[in-house]
Image (cartoon, rainbow over all chains, first blue to last red; front, side):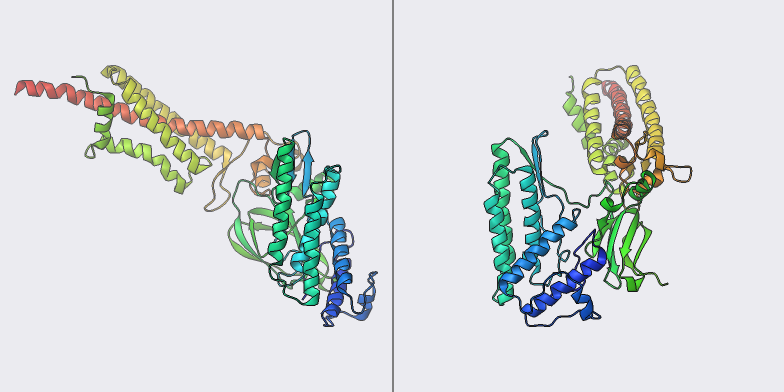
Length: 292
Length: 194
């Protein structure tokens, strides 16, 4: 089932709004599956703060619409990660950059969550549709493959809701993405464009980092970081730091040198905190909220 | 009868008893050890192979083109090669000391630049040196120094490193040739005497 610790980032609304959304999602799918899910410590008052309409027993259709809407909101509210740019046409350089890669496991919903695969696909499709519309509005080659992925993702959600066997959902979705990739490559070849796969958002310099095992205790914080030089530059030039953060995702990271981090703990754990850390060898790094 | 260059070359390399032969083979092989030692300029594996290759080419060059050289001429070239090796070694060590940084244990050295980027300059202070900025940016020199200055230094360090080892190979090859030349001059004399 959906876990309250999943990372649905929301730059504008902050952690509270994300938490409310998470709880809403829990309530919806708890009801769908006949389970009255309620996260520990959540009161009915907190749930009623959501502006979303929560049906008592949502149908398959309502569940699909809910997840589709949620994916769209996440794309809009998190332009650096979930809603990152996945396709760009550089007409001057005669190249087209694409990124069809899925998010790392556990970065959208819990890995074990049955809705994870279709929901993640909906986010990718939504971001791609936005970018295709912006870069290639007069082309139609991308419409059918994107519709096909969306349809498959919706079918997967329906299968989860009904409780039928959803085996092979991931393979089906990735097969549709492979078709989309073929279409992009064909388009690029026909128009003499160089098709370039975009690099992953977390890039490293020439020095190989040390493997760092990251632990967040308790696991209810969003940890973001940036290189310390980047942070110092932001302070000096008075530029917003928001666009520079990298979400600390997954248990293992390759890091080297000094970094600045921001841990967004819930208010009962003293709220957000910032600090620096240095990596000089392979190690295990644990983030814990500072005591008052 | 005139001996072919190839014959002379293979004879030297095949002779495991001669100290000179071993030294020559060692000199060609030494740069490859840097693949594990990581003392040379980065990328160590590529530079190690390239240096070895250049040494091998220079050995062949010397055997081929200097075979007919006079003893005195060879001696002079030997001195030049030794001087080149000494100067190259000092320059290599100085440049590596001054313009490379070791990010950590087991990591390859990083070549820095000599001209700072405009967006980094104002952030620096007497308490915050360029090397601190490098450490604070995942040891990526491109984010601290200009790409041109890094390229110039990378090229310079690599060329001098290769030149140093090539000079050593030339020195040893010239030495072996000189010794063999002297040996050959002595051998017919003793044969004639018997």
